[in-house]
Image 1 (cartoon, rainbow over the protein chains, first blue to last red):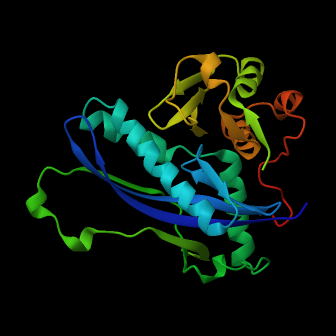
Image 2 (cartoon, chains in turn red, cyan):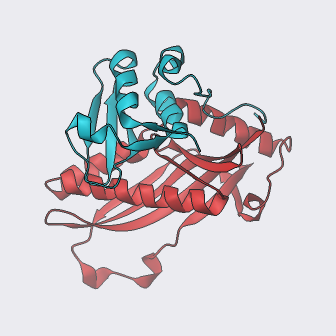
Length: 164
Length: 96
């Protein structure tokens, strides 16, 4: 069986409607993108406990993105107020999967030491320093007059390939 | 892409993850065990339900089962009794 596993960092931004509140969430997480037996799977390392697969890298990452969105929506549906939503989102976003984190770190080291090359199409992703901390911002959006278009963020993926 | 039924997964959890909890959500089923939560089980075509018999027919990719086993820290040997084709570790070490 042939398999390749590549480390990714991703950043997602989402607007979520809750019970009596509107929230903005921005999360930077870590995942492993694995090509195995003709399929691509994106496994969350932090957050862990989330994964999706498909016939291509593109399909796997789009399904993973949708799963991430649905988890935020599930949290919003169960939260009775913004404080509860924020707490649960932080629990989700910071929960790591130890097996995945271990393999993610190993894969980063292999790339940094040039012992592993990144295959297409992942080789087209930007490279960035390996920042260890996961970022999670959760804000209640109750002042729309302060909104700025420069705060919008498209989905972002990168290979953590250089020492921070 | 090998698939299994949620009912079979829950039978495995009964033995291999005693005290686990399957929580129906709007879009997914969550499985909680020993302080960890696996949030990636699809709800299938209908609504997620507390009715174990109804949700037992939901189809799940075997890759998700192995990811759940790894994330929740479930004994691989125990899980393999129910799913002999479960290939672990979840990410093979060919290039690691």
